[in-house]
Amino acid sequence: MLKINEKHKKYDLCMTFWLSLFVIFGLNIHIMATIKVLLHPKSDGLGGKIFRVAIRVTKDRKQNYLYLTNLNSIDEWDDQARVVTSENPKHHQLNRLIRKKFDSIEDLILEYEATKKSFTARQIIDEIKGVTETVTFFQVADEHVKNLRKAKKHNRAISDNSKVNSFLEFTGNENLTFNEIDETLLNRFKYHLQAKETVSERSIMNILILIRLLYNRAIKMGVVDRKYYPFGTDKIRIKLPETLKIGLDESEIRRIENLDLQEGTTIAHTRNVFLFSFYLAGIRIADVLKMKWSDIKQDRLYYKMGKNNKVVSIKLPEKVISILEIYRKDQKKGNDYIFPELKNANAKDARDMYAKIKTATKKFNNNLSDIAELAEIDKKITNHIARHSFGNIAGDKVPLQMLQKLYRHGHLTTTIGYQGNFIHKDTDDALEKILNF
Image (tube, rainbow, N blue to C red; front, side, top):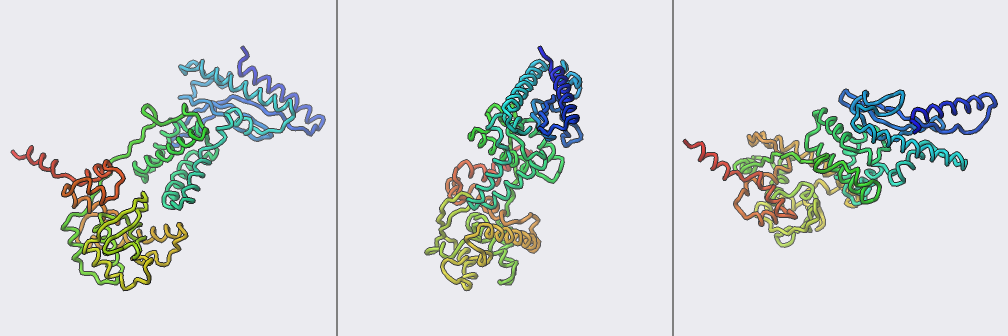
């Protein structure tokens, strides 16, 4: 059986012969493609190296690689014979794979040369991989982000685009195919992010969730075979870390309510928006700012949640009506916004709406830090804390089914999981009983 290094020697002799003729006679024709099996080391981003066995195709001075497998150490490779050594327990299978792919590439090049068809090294590698694999991960990711923008989901589009860019920055390969995204690569990516110390574990998991989503989409598209899927029980497992949700208690809410703030000031406006959200079971800040006077009919609020498009109808508490009276004097027409942040926004431009909501949210959060200091509250207060505060005060006072409606959750299990962050009475009592000796 012909060894790979023997084939390569023949190629070298052949190339030397033809190159000599080209130089001597000045022949103006394309140089034949060359094939080489080699070990292609790459930094793993953590100070070590990955040893990748590859077949390199060179045509017109341009190179492209077909990566076949990763080795654990350089000792598993014989650079002279260009084969995997017996140091690797699967060396027989891997060498058969190398020979098979080498022969396929050689046959394809000879076919192109015989028919005098032009081709590139990239075309050869793509054809060996299979037509479906020419669609890259980042092409699918780009299409995903574009679709989000078309659907006017700019918040998620920006977030997902940032996640994709972090993966691109790590791999440095715009042409990354799905079957190249294996457990080894994803684990190295995870360790790379953890080493930064500025990326939370939840953020890392969210990036992996996006990669998994795009991989599943590629499988449905026929871009990659499911056998390459790197996620699952015995592979990459995604587990979101538990987050600590801390809300304000009744006394802290009363302290905010009782602050002596002059109406018309920025800090008083911030308090109004925060309490408006809290009084209505923690409506998200984006939904609060999008509310219009036309959404109020006979002391009831009707609106559609931005997160899940659920239509909500809720009776306005007296405390909310009192806040509305402060802003009613600025009402211009029925479809005017209740709060001023979006009055000059272009409602038909989702990007403009998103930008103004983001700016307002940042401003409110800065002001809420001042409010916490004035109210002598040692907890960090943000707009979203209004939602946590409602959950904390609600506790187990009302049935979970009712809280599900107030929170606008699609599933009761979501409410159970969320409210579990704030119900501590049973565990507190149990601990007290155990330690009461």
